[in-house]
Length: 196
Ligand SMILES: [Zn+2]
Image 1 (tube, rainbow, N blue to C red):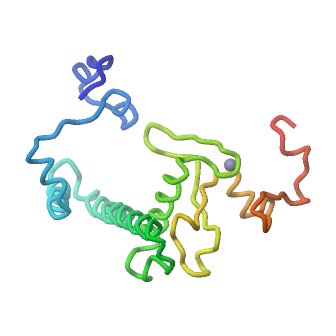
Image 2: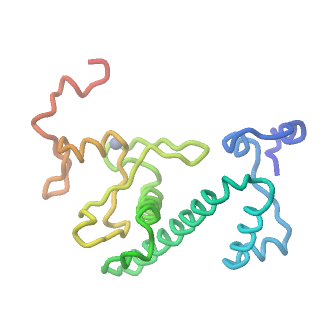
Image 3: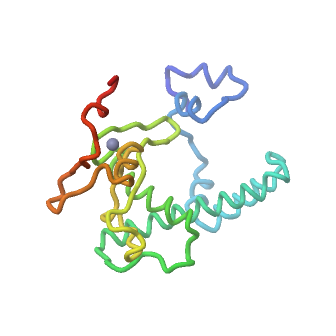
């Protein structure tokens, strides 16, 4: 369904070259009611995914990596849902029994939950950068290290932009016992302003 002012884009373009340009041109998609009902079922989605991957849209060489990526995306979604559910019910124990989710899905699921909770804004400098493709300038990091309890609940996470994340990891910034941000004496005031 095109945006009213972008009607001609979909009518005249043979194809849209990027996801960003597509998102810029459309409001969304209207689905057949029966298809929409089926897509709400996990089992039906798995079947549709398999059928799509078996079609000639994708080369045989691409299929294994697409299947692998699909499984990771699926794991990210479910892990993210799980940590949010546990956070809402204040369940304190570790979310993941090691081995249930692969490390990539675990980190990405944790990241998705934290970054969404912070609305893609850095907890320290408040910068917020979000592209039409959904890429964001912030990472998720653990407040209490994951190695000390495997706590992936969003309450144990904070969203940090790349620079703040790097500064924390490098010991240039830290938190005081009163939860205020403190900077290392190694930071020179002369080097922290643009253009100096
Ligand atoms: Zn920042």
